[in-house]
Image 1: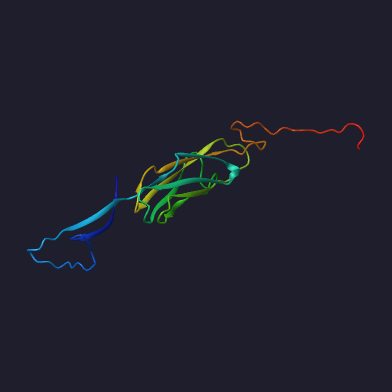
Image 2: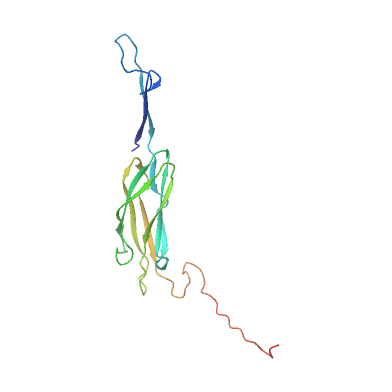
Length: 173
């Protein structure tokens, strides 16, 4: 559902509140015009974010599009999936993201907790609600937490580091 912002009004072609009086007689024509502009849309930039648990945080981008001339806010919260708040990540409950005039994008950081051992991939959602002076677009992103690599490399296709042994032969010069 689209929303609109009141942009102002005019009386007989002049902005209200100027020298144009609002007093008129029954024989005078009175033309009142109001202007409205669509509210900006606010939503998550991507539907999913992946992070290795040792990175300590996952960042979900929240973007605003449309008329950015005024401030607006949106509320962010997290919900458990296979990841658990307090064990795998630090949950957000009612965090307000405030956009200033002209501001189009902000990052929302969620702290990721590193645990010993292998837990496998687990996930939680970040949801937007309560938009003020804006309308909601895509409102949910899934954050996937991956285990820390066992040997310091990312299991997503990178090989482990090579071990190189140097041996000097002959006399040192």
